[in-house]
Image (cartoon, rainbow, N blue to C red; front, side):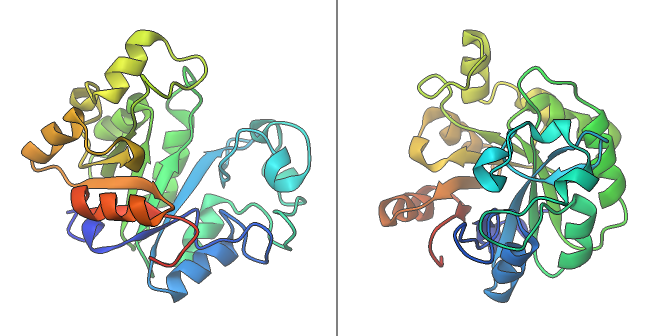
Length: 245
């Protein structure tokens, strides 16, 4: 079921250059990754009309120069925005799947705000992926999002993303949540087929437990030679950015 997962190195948000014609999470960046033989990691969140759109930040300004939240604009408004200095616009997940067409493995990260509602976005994503012919996995930091697929799309490959939230907490995370997510205590809920852990936190006790259980381990995001050495030493594959792996 996951044989393809560890045979691939994954370009983080595609093989991108935000000052060039192929910015992050654009169809051009995904095509560049495919042309160079890489898998693609991408981010998906809901637009105002509920459509799954490929965009990382919950706010628009960094990549588009426009103020506001991604979730506040429908797809028709998002498609009027340009990514970085390029002519690329934020793609929908549907457009991305059609363009990639099964040519390379996809790691689809579901972006749900901490404490956000689980279900509507996951259902829209599942509907789009139901007939997709290529290799893919759904993954999220939020174990409740991953667990949705356990109940509703059990045939999908699932990944639990994590890091040491005790030392690097996200805004709004309670202490207990930081500890539980760091130590992967939520795995009983999310039942992941693989774990994707922050390369800066390798090696660590939670990962040793993952390895003992035989669960495939990916790590993110490899950006330096030192991190690449860690990834090769401790992980089965990795997500990288800023160089050709």
